[in-house]
Length: 310
Image (cartoon, rainbow, N blue to C red; front, side):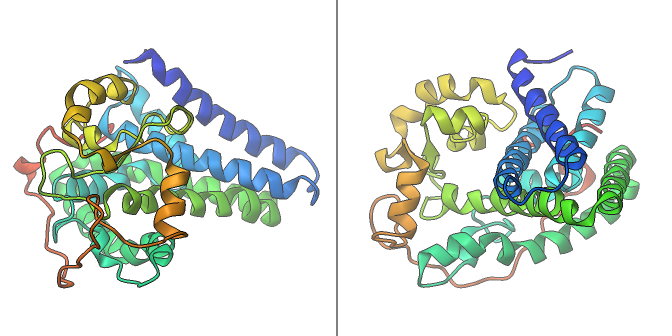
């Protein structure tokens, strides 16, 4: 059933999410354990957002209907219809990295305190993503009815999940559903700032920051190998470390291959907390330009970015 057996881990994370939600709804609300479970489920929801990212690039199952069902399940874990990840990420960010048509380009953030750039990144880029998603969804209703149908099904299941969990217990909904979903959305968009700010979007290798620590990559399904993912977006996540070592690492600026995300984050956002290019020079922000239209014509989707399970 699976294209790669490594995705047993992906399935295990999704099942664990649903198991924890069920357990927390079955047990009485305990303010001794609830804060810890909010953290655990929030992290798990973020990991499921990473699985969502992987799935829309490289489907998990051989059969389309299996992938369609999996995307429905992921929509409930992540907190958004999985198919809605395609426009802003695959077709905008991947195809126009750090250009005016990239809705998530890091140069939109211009706070002097670099920590604010990281913390507020998702909130600054979200309005443009929502607006363009709405345009894309409207266009795909006639251009790609199969995609629109899958998006509609995911949306219906997600709304039903929200209403059900809200009806069963509004306090548990806030703690174990809404907060984790918001954290997942903040995290999966915010990590883009870490991965690209201060990099060279025009360089064949130095366009992304990579984190190669094994613990991070075990939980985040090798998404620390971000540069190679941009070069080969359809490559399955389980293959990234080996291909990164062979094809990207020898050409990469050493400052763009970091071991620890935590160490880098402390340096970039706490001390010294300076916004620097990968070569150590201060980031020089270009003029703040408006977003360029990017919604492709039907024949322009190409194979570089999967449209998920249509």
